[in-house]
Length: 256
Image 1 (cartoon, one colour):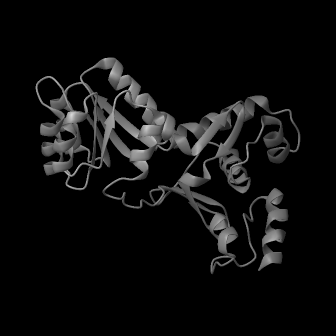
Image 2 (cartoon, one colour):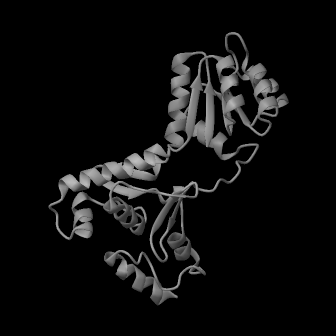
Image 3 (cartoon, rainbow, N blue to C red):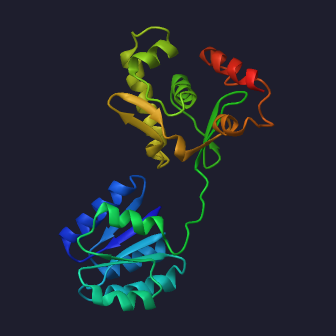
């Protein structure tokens, strides 16, 4: 979800952005204290939602909303203010929502859960092919890594379906021992660098020394098959280039 937040008061803007982030960590948020800068940005970068303070220096939130809607007709406008008397103007603008300050996570949640203009469904940029040979794609392009083991590490994380994997576990799978700390650091960096360069770093979770995949941000033939047990692409072969994938392959074949 792409969001802009506009408020000429610094603390109010920081509080608003914090509440949005707490509700949706994956949201792309751009914040502005200058309404004119916000308008210029949204004209060049269409967004899904605009949180606009009603009273601002130089341009009111209602005036800004009219200009934004002219540039991005389907955008959801959510007004924020400390005064309830502006609600009539908000309704006349066909705003999606109206928040009275102080802004809280719960208030943000209610408005983003009930947007006037539903968000267009977007296909994940990251795609994994597990049936046959393992391959990884971003925007249709095959990912290329510095080390062959980086691709194998990614394959193992995909196989684990979002479960956190410790360094010891990864080394025992990739090298069958735990004496490759330096090499593992290199391939972890390679993995993060490649996804970072494609602006998809959020797909890889590096938390408390464990690595995992954000399964909600990717498309994967294996995950789809587990949902409905149907796939024309599955012919009894799963990540065939990796021996550690044989148990999963046998499990899938038994379900077919």
